Image (cartoon, rainbow over all chains, first blue to last red):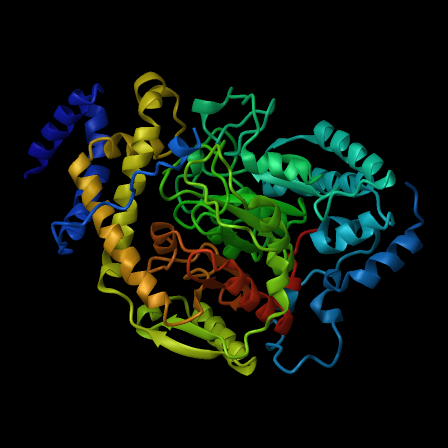
Length: 66
Length: 509
């Protein structure tokens, strides 16, 4: 994606989240968001079996207490 | 309770060898003792009398308090007097609770006089990071967003400290919302400074806790650790900081960064004190669903175990070859100490996922932080301080669920790999921080966030003094498997007993 496309996507995702991302704010947030995308790209290089579950698991202890 | 100065000194010195300066230590060092510190100018002989009281350890002070050779009010007044003199240069406190402290000290004095001694924390002045909810006392996280927030209940750790008879003397500084490894200004209040060099960072984010302990402004403190925030300031300020196992200490009533990475733990001036404080803080809390029901041992019982026959893992030295030269020297000296004490050192092959674990931590942390900040972003966005917090969480709120969960899946794999690795040794050693305070710490792997990702316990303790620049604390990190805090304390106590670094004081007067 080009920088312009990323900025457009940022504003769109923010709108979906209920936030208005002004041009000034999207400029300010852009480098940080790009650094997150770089981190995500690095994470994607780790191969995982399709059965892998994310670390937080449902914990029913509190329900059992009730 | 009145005691004569002479009687106090006789009593305190009898139980309090650590308040001596290393230069005043016995002429014949123990066999395994490390070389003397190389920057004698960093040592500051302490005046005797009330000047010594704020630098007492919990262990020393509690012995005096229990035997009524010292009163909680006298101890609290001595700490408050030192705060009056030193705090304007250190900025460790965001809120000083002078009246509440003296009130609590008077209650402690009456209870002890009546024979109702509660334990080693009774009558001990302590501070908590200003992320900890304190009933009726503002809790700001150093952010204008929370500048008027006065909780109507205490965080569980605050309740535990108060129930143990501790004397809350104030709320300690941090960067805005605990974001960042070092304070960078722009929060609601001034940043804390490093007592060893007031122009340098104390590390963060529990910056006030580290600075206050090093400056003798509290006798015990707590911190929070999501990316190394207990261990960073402990390392840069020359004190002891423990990030316990995830779930060991309650997070209830703590301003959140990231629910699955946040830890709360003890910060002290000695390993013994740290174990004492964890005894009070640890335990199941029904108000925190991540809280473990695992039984809490008496951590002080591990302190005399020694390390003979203990298997100690270290990273392959190539992994830390980009660390500061003084740090590498201090780490090497620490390994020598442990070998002389009978431990075996083995280089460990790190799992391949370690290479992306800081990326995993970044995505998990900022995605969870953005969720916590959701209402602040929509309702109070203009109130954030002049820091990068708003930018970071605003950008973090754009991470998709799929991306967040991908990071959490890699985390699952890493925890399995790291658990298997940690089965091959008893404790794992690394330098406590890649560089002295204020020096470049931009390294490939700092071994900080990795222990938040896996939730394993890790402690940092003093392990040297820098030569270039001169006179700054260096440190050692000891980690272990989940709920193996006792193994860490055993190794840390053995190192502390064999060295003198924890006796050093910053050049403040």
